[in-house]
Picture 1 (cartoon, rainbow, N blue to C red):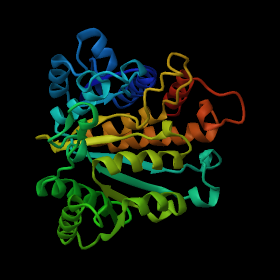
Picture 2: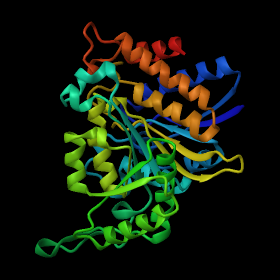
Picture 3: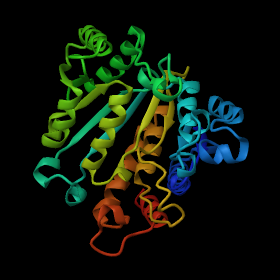
Picture 4: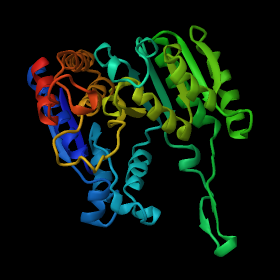
Length: 360
């Protein structure tokens, strides 16, 4: 196959971990005789520095032309007090909207080799294997009206949590289909005891569940779900929730795997004529500027995101499985970065990427 991929390295450690994910893609292309066509673009803080905007028009054009987009994290402390339109994260919201990716898939798996790295006791973390499906283009991050107005005692801020029935229906169907191919259980998370928005969410999810009689559906309030992720994470198979709740819960779920650096994600939208998903792929972690440029960041979340890219945007399930197996082999070997608490000297970012390529 011809694999046309846009690479957006981003900020901080994003450039380092994305480099290793690209190295893995080259190894896969070499082994399975694919043609890799890579284009690089700007997003986030680096884009603000070079173009004055976090999501340049050129990047949007490149993303729309590519078959898939692989991203690094965005964000730098120097922009923490910048106006909203000049923050790196605005670029992330912009590219999601431009590509129409409405469902973010975040798998959480506790690898046997990393049980001691999890903050949970081994018997709680062991066997954890679920996916959080987060609605990505609606909710409070995009709703209007929004903004800050007034002065002095009259100054106020407004954000609107808005969902339409079609937005809920499409992400719910994706989550139910995922559950059909896993253990057949879906947990929908909301705050329907106090939010009308969540009441509509629950109503629509129940209606969609009738299309999937082979999937068992249950509901949890978001605060209870946060607690159950710590008390009994093995109870979950597929978790479906709205944008802000999913943002928070997926970061909580990330630590179950031993390090937030372990978790990949796939943001999916519509289908292409080939049947492949429009996709945006990135690790869950942030840009970690405190360790940027030191060759110590964990690249496995970025490499896992590359595996998801192969599977969802190109249908290359064998290649994706080989990457994921290689990641597990590297974990078992103990050749890992410092965040995973190796028994010996930690490996560098580059060494871990090379080890995954060797395992492939």
